[in-house]
Amino acid sequence: MSFKDWYFAEGGREGPEKLQGYKPLDSEVAKQRADSTLQQLRAFVERTPPDDFARDCRSRAERVIGELEQMRRDL
Image 1: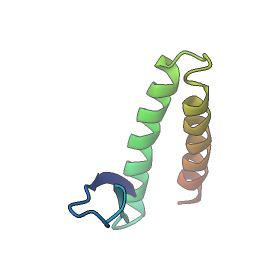
Image 2: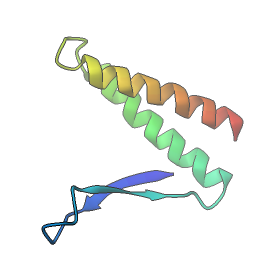
Image 3: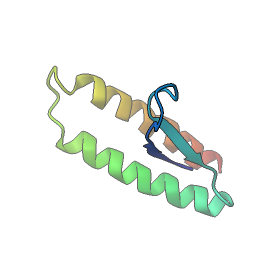
């Protein structure tokens, strides 16, 4: 359960960059990935000022934190 933004179009008709997703091997790997992502997102929210510029980013991060915490409980 992770993503990588790695695809760079080589031709004129391949479109924009794309995300590559990875499925975890088992529930233990999923928990480890969720914990790592949660740690990074919480650090982002803590260090990002709650001003107009970062409001949307913080809001999305907080939503993802909630979803990851729920997924982590369900594993």
